[in-house]
Amino acid sequence: MSQEQGFWEKAWSTIKSVPGMGLESTTDAMDTLSGKKIEEQLEEFRKVFAPVLLGLHDQVRGQEQRLGLLEKATAEQVEKTRSFEEGLYSIRQQFKSVTTSRNVAFVALGVSLISLGVALWASP
Image (cartoon, rainbow, N blue to C red):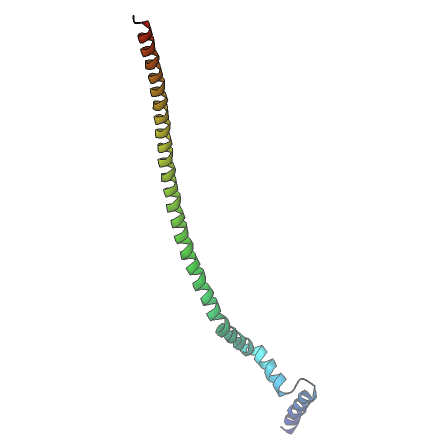
């Protein structure tokens, strides 16, 4: 038993004598091998980044809702614009019709004045 104990004491003193291989380094190495260190880092990242990611997720959801509302409003405006254009086209057609009617009325007035003049000139 004393040989075995001497072996472990010698091994431990050798580990302690190597620079950077003290108790803290050994504990760090054990934590790394067991995954405890990674687990602690993951927990730290979760505490830091989970609220950030949740906040970003909420902002993206809000942007999606706003985009949906904007698309709906845009579609409504497009429909109103089309309706307005159709009304404007109708008004233009009516204006052309009125202009044509006016031109015909002027021509008819001119013809009737000429006819009246001819009738008055030809009568004794």
